Length: 163
Image (cartoon, rainbow, N blue to C red; front, side, top):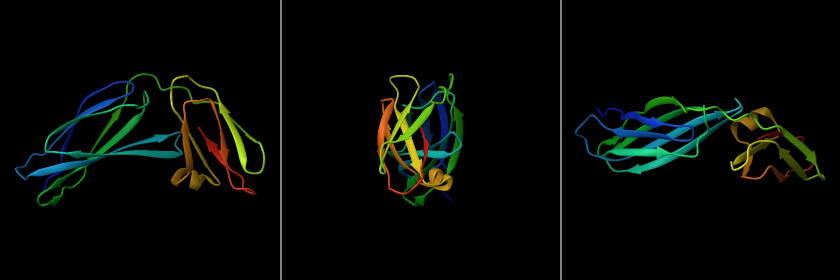
């Protein structure tokens, strides 16, 4: 039986998490697959996937958000097959940034000007869809470091926006 890998949180800060991966077996490990999950505003779950080569590994994931819960899951790729998943949870330190105040205004039938308030020198994600279900499961999205963006949409549809 292949055991799940051990994920150990080495350290964390406002914008990063460092963790180590190891196996408690003599089975040869060729690498790991790691998924990092977090949720924005209870509407949109995000995921970042890392493919890591080698047996032992210490990883640092940066560009995270302060005071945000993250779930890290990992499995090992071994000479006998894939291991079961293991999970850890960690909340980054610091104070979570205030939610931006979004304004969306139709320019014409296919363009919407979105603008918002918030801190400078950060990257914003803009998510939009025609229903809450689509906004949660598979929204259209884009990113920008600006405080406004023009989004092209389908005509004759109503959209929900989240930044």
